[in-house]
Length: 375
Image (cartoon, rainbow, N blue to C red; front, side, top):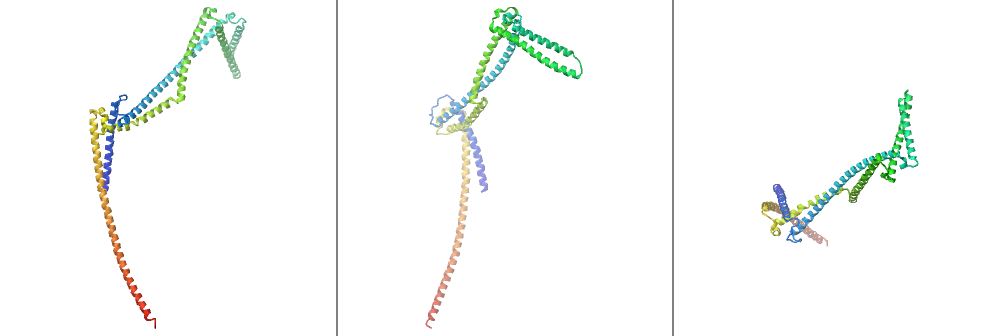
């Protein structure tokens, strides 16, 4: 019995293996048929037929994949564009910072030159006096630093010298910055309120450079503003719909999920291709290239049928043996019951005999009573 069940297990394993190979061949046939029909080619069978329904599902899934891939490409382009925008904006802002720094220097140069002609911009002379005061302070602290550098002494004198030098350097830096700001402000104010035509020589050249730099900065600012607007638009899209990387990952997962449905559809169409009742609907898409696969499918189907037949035969012999075992068991039961009946009949006969004897004794006792009643 165990050997036969082991044989069934082996046959079922072979049947499963053959069935897997058969299904793989059928899937391949179905996939080939779908490719031959194509995405746009009209199909004679209506959507309610088995081939038509399978094709409708196939095209629906394929469209989902195509749409998802197109969206991924769009998102990837947007990501690349966003990166390009960041790099371009950074470069433009760096360029703008350089131009602004250059403009400050030119403004300061123009302002310094204009202070030689205060009547052009400052009839009261207030700005000129402010310049002179700052220059005097700068000279004063520079001389003080020179004196401190020459001073010698012990550790205490050195500490005092160091503290004074730090204070003088700080004040000197502030005065130099204030003078630079004064020159820059003077140059800026002049060109905002006067015309370049009022200047000549180096001042006119410097003023022309200022206007050129301002024009470049204005054009650059417009360019940066436009780039930032595009960056903001892309950022708002991503902000509203989630990060691009997360969306792309979600679309890729969806594509993987949809692709997982194709084997079932390939198998469905392949089964139609090997079914004599339905394959006529797709006969024009089955070619000589499919003959080897069809032959192998037929071979594995015959192998599967043989396995099933052999399994049924073995199961039948097992069933016969099970029935025989049941008959033997019941016959033994009958024998047992018959033995019990025989024993019971013997017991009954013995009881009947004892009953008869008891009745006879009763009769004898009754007679005794009768014979002795009148005495």
